[in-house]
Image (cartoon, rainbow, N blue to C red):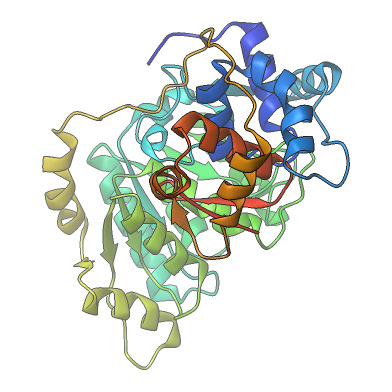
Length: 367
């Protein structure tokens, strides 16, 4: 990873990620294609038009980005870029890592090895006590605890690790703490730990923002512990994301008579590591921590020649190969007979017109 992005480059990154139809994967594709955020921003209107956008795409203006940076600074929030040393290393490994993280608190906590502890909002007293004990013992062993600041297990894990370092991942902006009653807990976390969000200030979390938030919880961590979780719950989404990201998944067994234990018990049947004490987690994670981290996520700013515009026949041929079922970009290159650069350009056009969805593993589908 590099040192610091220049203030000008960071502003361009913020403008790009805050523009319509630009998510983390699209951001990365644009940077790789155009060599930098400034060139990508200039290309957005034409890409969206060629992709069939119904109207002009909203591009975050220089003034809007500057206002967000100024408001964030006033709240003690700083932006960490994917290419910078302070950015959490394991999070940088996932293919949809946020290009910019808004962070508040002691950023040194983000450099600690992390274990995620998540579970039911309506947790049992026993589940809360165990989460607290596990978080305290893992903290004493040198791990920071990350979770989602939710009621129940999340809150218990955060409180028990305040002294040793805890990281809360927010589903909304830093000024929209959810649930509201955890505003004091958020301030306590910032004293020795950190709070992070990929969302702008003023963003009220919606239902679909929580699964998006969960990928960051698992992405930060070396392993994820599920304490209590019903069969259909956000905690199980976090466990699934952890597996997709190559993280270790742990589960705490519970009574078969308690619906809150059903999800964790099912994870154990599927091969998750059983946890009854912190040593069960530590013994699995210690060998992993000795392995070097492959950081292939850096997004360098460099000059790159702009590829030619796809021809109408090429565009039609590539679009005809797409449908609701995800396909790999390599398959599109092979089946269309077009160059990888042309295929990537057409995909960016569709993406910025809001007609394409990017999945993990270089898979794409039409919306």
